[in-house]
Amino acid sequence: MTVIHRYITRLFFKYLALVLVAVVTLYLCVDFFARIDKFMVREIDPIKIVFYFIYKIPLIISQITPAGILLAVLSVFGLMGRNNEIIALKSGGVSPFYLLRPVIVIGIVLTLFLFVFSEIIVPVTTARANRIAMGEKKQKRALESMQNNIWIRQKNGIVHVKYVSPTDRSLLGVTLYDFDSSFNLVRRVDARSATWEKNGWVFSNALVQSFDHAGKGGKTGFFDQKRIYLDILPDEFKPVVKDTDEMSFASLRNYIRRMEADGYDATHYRVDLDAKLAFPFVCLIMCLMGSGISLAGKAVDGMAASFGYGIVMAAIYWSAYSFCLSLGYGGVLPPVIAAWTVNILFFCAAAILILRLE
Picture 1 (cartoon, rainbow, N blue to C red):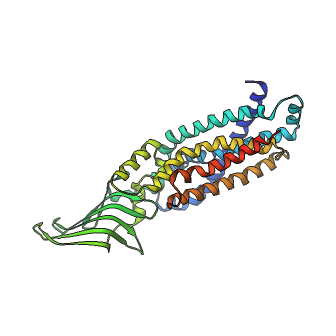
Picture 2: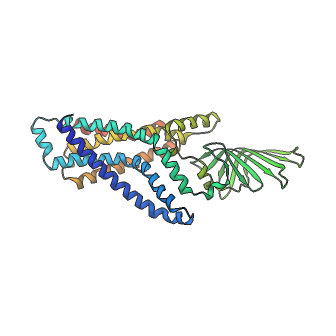
Picture 3: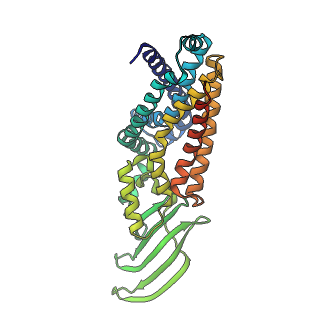
């Protein structure tokens, strides 16, 4: 590595560290004041509250690293431009593309790092943070809880749910067992799904069977839509259902395969699966975008201008990325297209900026 490349690399990681520390600190402060009242109401131990915010740090880092990379690149080349270092290097015959080499290498390395970090560290710490945030009181009703096959006890009955859909607050593969005071089965309900509507559960494609005290079958009926009482609120499933941030790429892929093998729609999870691959590439894209803007003379006014360009660019990316994911969740776009469209557009924009450099 040449002296120039070492200089750029050292400055880059210096500013990246400053940005990450500043943003993580700000994020934790805002999150603390937003959640402290809820923690107090649930009487969560102060030590657990401290660990909650510690466990949140990896997720925060994974989310803000691309923006931090963009700000770091803009800061490095912006200050070099303000100090006339770039002009001096160009006068000495150094090509702008020569200055891009360490940035591209850094972008590739950080892309790999973010993917591995999001696979190994983030799921574990996010799961622990979510368990603390939910508190222990809500978990008492769960007899057995995994990502699928959830058993929950209610008054005079037991409910089995195969999957919980996060998009429309619905339950998939629902079986309800109602018992009398002697624990004799008096009713069984099997439904493909149950959706929370107007303060109650509406079962779809439901087979309802009634039994007498001898356990023999009585009335049997099939209903396209039927409102059936469940002593369970949608939020009570949160402690027993994993969020996609709590799952690695492999575990999420296996979960999708099981869900689709049972005949259920896994579009929401497929979008998140493709996003797990697409998002880390933002590191490389932001390196290229920041370099194209800075070396084109757009950020020669120093740190303030660099941060201004970075914040605007990051806001545009996040808005477009979230919008495309929403279209994917709604089935408007295929999951792959929803996850990769913004990356492709920003990569093309960065490539145009770089190719226009003299």
